[in-house]
Image 1 (cartoon, rainbow over the protein chains, first blue to last red):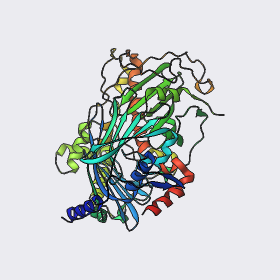
Image 2: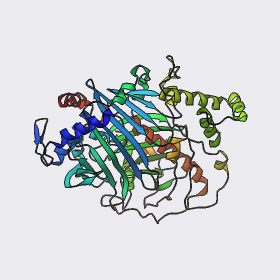
Image 3: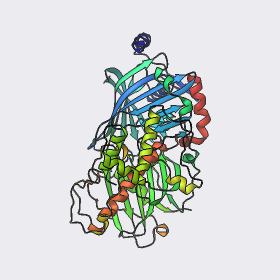
Image 4: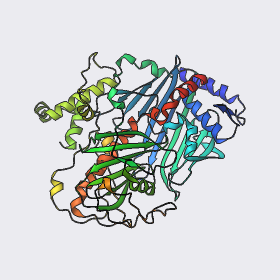
Length: 327
Length: 201
């Protein structure tokens, strides 16, 4: 199989470098010496964006089925291509070619949207601008260990004010690619775990992408990136490092209910804030957890505020209770 | 529509089942027919067998377009539940039965509701958009983790409604996250990051 030959050749090439040394990185005129967390994050970013690779990984939440994925990335004639596939069940396939992402899912007509970033289980900021995480998190380099059969560098991403869960990542020494990601709450319990079970890096682009017929991919649905809406309310406390990346009024697909909506994000964690009408009696705040998400809700008899995201309930509470009329 | 009907339909599309009864229902039921069509489109697409012209149903105005957004089909809660009184319970409440073919909807089903935690806070009388921000005593910085043992039984009349709403929001949140535009994380730096990628190649 040509794959194997290329793979062996690539591994020989890569392993011929001195494994223990690492180049420092210069970005925007700032030099990050080797063996700083910044340099490692940049190495992760560079690996994710420029290498030809294929990763198998699994995502695990407490009380929930394990989800296995396959992720391919290649540069074909200077165009980035990605493929993310959920391997259990009827499956879901996502293809990215340059800035067009096409979705093929059961129960849905295939469609495309315009973006350079697939929002998958691997946090999008690793692909985009990982140093921006420093706004909300402290980066700490930990030791080296063996993960997925490879030598790995461990790095902690710690919330500056404790408002977010802690994230620990393990990066492949040679390529910088992600091998493992743990999300842990303040008590040390695992909220979510992502583990790469096999990693292959190639010299040449994955032949799989030759089979994708670009002309058959659905046209970009322009309506998925609509301009925002002003609301009569605003969130007065947002966790450090996060910003509002979406606000609109839309209908929930499952209940047909209309909601006013805001999304907060820092590229690592996404939080949804919903305001909806309610008929129920005024309730004290309450929360539930589903997989890695916290859903926190309070209402005053007329309106209900619900905050959903991979965040501690105390943070959701703080966001929800900070909402007031807009200035 | 029952889940087993959809599962039968899926199996039928895959050529694994042929019941005359299902064929009859398919001809008579508009919803089932529409689903039939969509399964085939998805299947054809994955197998690279799509026809050259595919009619996509995108309506003219925004409100309709939002409704036609590829929706994750979630089983609708049984309407009967809303009017009947439920006995008190504070334990595990399965939201939806796990369906075989409902990949996304089934995976979002709430398997465990831990119950509502009670926080100390003053009652708010005023309408929400006029109220000052609600102070929640004891829940500021330096929080202690909320104990999962402090559950209380939910008032019966609210339960079905709450469950439905919560599930709808969980599903929507996951969809919003998948569709989010990561470029919005830093609009002004969009050009810069594209240049970086070019340099690294």
